[in-house]
Image 1 (cartoon, helix red, strand yellow):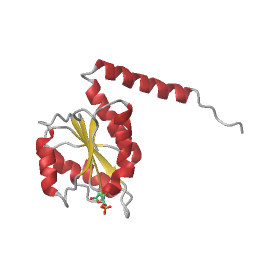
Image 2: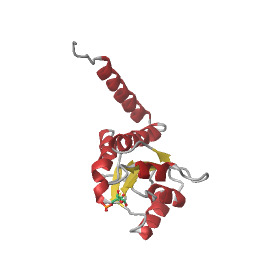
Image 3: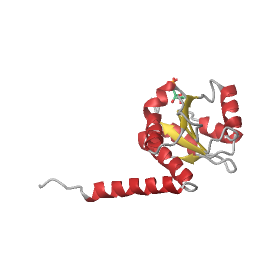
Image 4: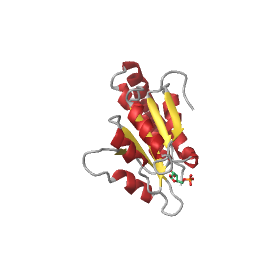
Length: 166
Ligand code: RP5
C-alpha cells in the first residue's frame, strides 16, 4: 500500500496479523496528509527484505519508520541497526503475554542503536503516527499549524466533557 507521492514515513510490521493495530498509525498519517507506505517485513522470516528495506530507506527519502511487531519483537531494533532513519517501535499485543514480551523486546535496546518505543497496542500505534507527524512538523510550518489545531480540538473535547449526575 502506497500513497500517491513519494513516502516520507514507512509503516512496517512483522505480519499482516499486526495490521489491526498498525492501521492506527496509518490513520494518523492519512489524517495529516503525510505520504506513507505500509508493508509487511518480518525480521526472522524475511531477513533479506528487512536488510534491503532498512538500507535503502534514507536514500528513498523516508524521514521515519514506524515498526510494529509482536512476541520476540526484534523488527524495530534490526531496522535501526541498518539505517540512521529514526525508528519508532510499536509493541503489538501477543497471544500469550499480551504484548509485554513485545514491549520489553523493543524498549530494551542496548546503548548505541536507539529505538523510540511506544505503548502496547492501538494507542502506541496512533501515538507513533502522531510522533512522526511532529517530527516532520519541525521543518513544515503548515503541518505544525495542523498539529496545533489537532491538540486544540482535543483540549476542547475534554473541556466540554460532563459527568453524569449521581
Ligand atoms: C511477529 O509474530 C509478528 O509481528 C506478529 O505480531 C507475530 C505473529 O505473526 P503471525 O503468526 O500472525 O504471522 O513476527
